[in-house]
Length: 173
Image 1: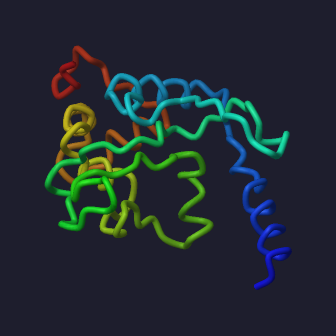
Image 2: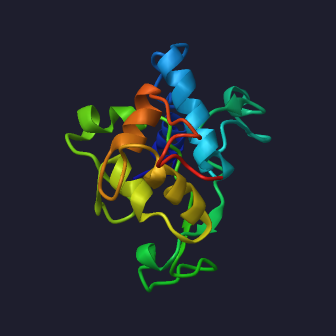
């Protein structure tokens, strides 16, 4: 591959648009965002970041909404792979961006998530969280209808169903 082609390919991949946010102003989505925050997910999956200086003006100092802090977090022994990677320990993982998560089934024809594809959808991915995310996982799990292996919490977040903090089984934060 020539240097010129590589340069063009790099610009192309850097400027690909992220998936467009769909149904962004519905009551269900707003309720889902509230649950996301209530559970503690937004501690690592932060709503907005600002890009820094970049040679391409299109990418310079832009506010983006990837739902990540791009930092390493200890995710506990359940996700440890026993292989440290540079300065990251075996249970440390970079918070993946969640933008476009709803498009995975259509685009990839599956919902396998996490670094090794072990989670069969968002609910299982959340239930694999541990370490620094243990509290968020517990809050999600305790939300009415989610239970071990259930999807009530993730569907509540996805469609904005209520998870009344006063209800039996609701998150205790």
